[in-house]
Length: 134
Image (cartoon, rainbow, N blue to C red; front, side, top):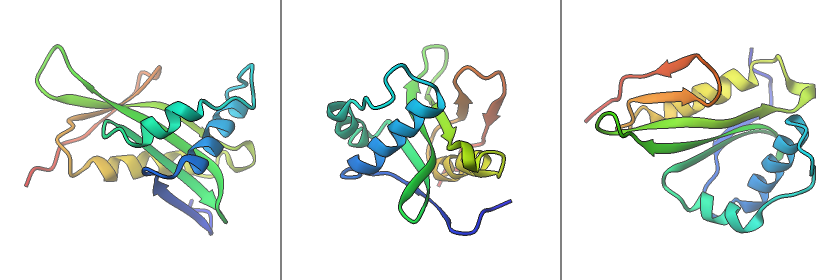
């Protein structure tokens, strides 16, 4: 079920403020010891890193969910895989399909890459996908 008014987008260089808001949401949802800490130095570096992906869900420019993922080169085969590192949705919007939609958004974003697998950190399930090659 899609909630009306939720917009999904991939953050890019210069979206430091939105990424900081997502980190604060992660801190709250994961019950981090320091709810207000954001490593602002690394945020800019990550958004400029081509091997890092951050997708957010927002309503009226308020971040209500998001995920981060990293591309890792494989040592047991050729190529690389994309690993979802963190995924969270604000409590008031959980169980409304936003987390699933975030995963679908990254799958769609990766369809036109050479990544062969999308994996979730710490979760047994895998989302294997066939890469689309031109």
